[in-house]
Length: 243
Image (cartoon, rainbow, N blue to C red):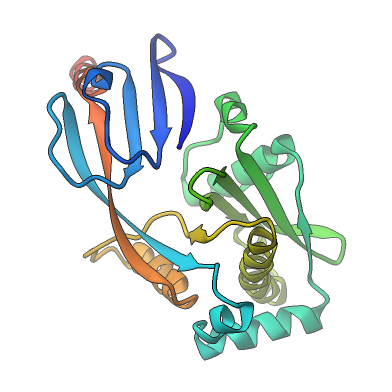
């Protein structure tokens, strides 16, 4: 279990609790539970289903790779031939700068300095092509549950018009996932969480992301997010004032 202190609207303090067995009843004012193993209704919280794709990396590596689809294994081999290399570990600042450049092209929110609150638990990896960073992954690590979870992924190719570089970057992303799995397996982690899965969606973009995650095999896992009543009320009031 991991706990991260935060503030809503820079005013209201609360704690994000990752991978807890079950929410604490008395935490309904100040604690937001992410990916809890519980699926029960708990007084004081708004319960939301959360689906994700997980890979058991406690298995032998050949067995893990055997569950990748053929195209993914091919793209990984091509990335190696292309000369893509991977680096296990880089600074949060470099990741924030890289991600925010990517976010502009996707219409996503920028990462702010609040991301540094994850520093004790975060680990960042990257893929490099011709001395240029082309893909970065940011993970949160829970040593207690031996689980590593992808928080953010960013790629260079959305900022480039070079079709060859776009293709190499796509392959580099797959290679980086494999090298990440190898690294975290060596570190003693047993669960590799791909960071969410859009269950029963009809959104074209989300379906593409699902397909990418499916290409690594693994299994679909249902967990629960518990949003405390204080944050639910705050979110409602924020919408009202906007109107």
